[in-house]
Image (cartoon, rainbow over the protein chains, first blue to last red):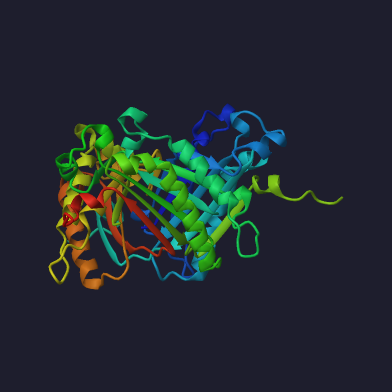
Length: 154
Length: 154
Length: 154
């Protein structure tokens, strides 16, 4: 942990003239934002080896009224179709409300910057939520974390 | 919010003779059902601009015993293979148990109607659950909601 | 219920020489593990007709520093790229901590066995978590469960 999962309408994967955007770049930007987060003691909020962002376009979807109000307002074509992006960060328990607010604000700013053009030019919803994992069992096995561990003294 | 995410076995995306069904139509029917929901005060439960349904077929899956009992019971071919559909609605907190029950019953009826033939002809599980979002951070940016706002007086 | 959802980086779907692995086989092994679980009274923890595993490769992703530390440590090519697997089991409430620990340990052992080569040869994170479903509404319709019911006396 942490992981950030993005669920979105597949029209955001179309080529840019049709309203799409670079979702891989968004994943990278969000991961970099997570890596950069610091807590009240100026320590990293998240371990570098545990940061990951996974994005999933839906195979089928329906949004709002399906486009009626958008068409009436003059939005046309794929680039004017309704889009939705849901970003959900699941992080471990116990970090406190200050960290939640700080991380949330940073991720929201990152997402808003990425979707600025979209928000200005089409009907799109961008929702970001952070959950504290309610897990009753938790097991991690990783050959990634050791890449970032301090070298052992021999 | 709200959003409804559907996770399902990919055999439901096969052409109808092989047991598939129109999942886009299901998304639309569920969204329409959500839009139609009313609370105790006869107000819409969900904002029209916030309703979305996203459906995801799994790339890999395993269900139950893999088909042994189904084959023994005479179910054959793709149209007789095990299928599963999981519908999860995440909605905001504080709406109360009456609304939960009403929305749940309406969505369940919609899903049961869509899968009536499937439920009669193959081994399939259709599970619907509603969660109240436990988020510790929540940020929404939308150019969709304004389509449904009352015009401002100038 | 229960269901186990696997979210993972798509490089694990590449052919084995490039670092991929058989995710369908993993789904089957996990389902078999779930079916085999017994509670304190030696009864099945999960109903056979309710076990399903669904796996989803991300369309876009970002992990950790994107590969910098891995490359510096000598990992090269697709087979040496960062990978992540997140396994989340959602099960019904009320089964108790002993069952959670037992199921979790069994599923973790299954996942570790499947990814043993990967864990030894590339930077990969494998995280397993169990959640107790917090649902406020729950409806199940199934033509799968009856396959495993005791025959009715006529």
